[in-house]
Image (cartoon, rainbow, N blue to C red; front, side):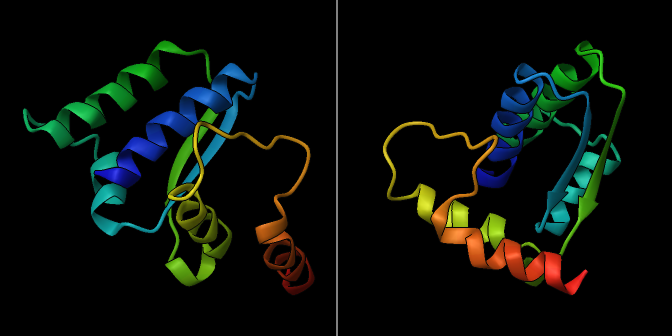
Length: 112
């Protein structure tokens, strides 16, 4: 449920910032399948997914897709998720890289 809430919040922020081509990567296989198959039901989780879909389809997005990435391939997001537990408020980084993930991002560019 937490990762679905993070997806919804991230999508909202990204679209409000003006991005129109989105790739959403998740390391939760159940969430990936639910998003890929547009699976919704009347549970709180299903209603959260419905909210994500309504939000996505109401915007003028050029391209968006959902990808499953193992946690080992999504280390920067995992580190930031852990950090978010100790941060008050809402934080967005658009042009700078948070200190906590600078090395992970740099290593990712070197390995590509």
